[in-house]
Amino acid sequence: MAETYWITFCLSDSGNEERRYQALLATVRRMTSDDWWTESVNFLLFRSEHEIDHIAGEVAAVIDTDTDLALLAKSSAQEARAIGAVEDPLLYELMPYAQRFHPPSAPPARPSESTSPSP
Image 1 (tube, rainbow, N blue to C red):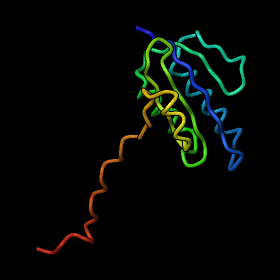
Image 2 (image 1 turned 180 degrees about the vertical axis):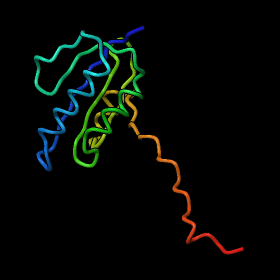
Image 3 (image 1 turned 135 degrees about the vertical axis):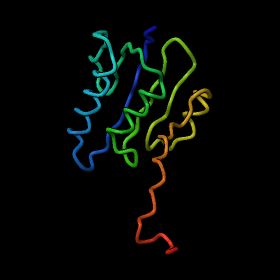
Image 4 (image 1 turned 120 degrees about the vertical axis):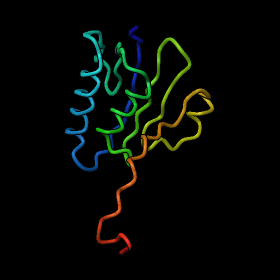
């Protein structure tokens, strides 16, 4: 069943801000039905069949998580993810149910043959 989500975001002016903005819009657009509201600056309201952590992971992949931030929440539940450079602890006081999103770790690299011990 599709859920209604909202996301607000702030992209730093470092690097290519416009490219990250367009990538974020395209990412959300790819995960939504045709129901999305975009009239407000840096705020999107949309329906999606995807789970909140999946959406958060896709958002994290297209922003600079060292300098950009996003807050993603379900409109029908007290469930939210803080993505990227969220530093103000007041967010977690105002929204105690918000969780910092940590992208899944990449699998460990396999040791190269040159570093393997000889038999």
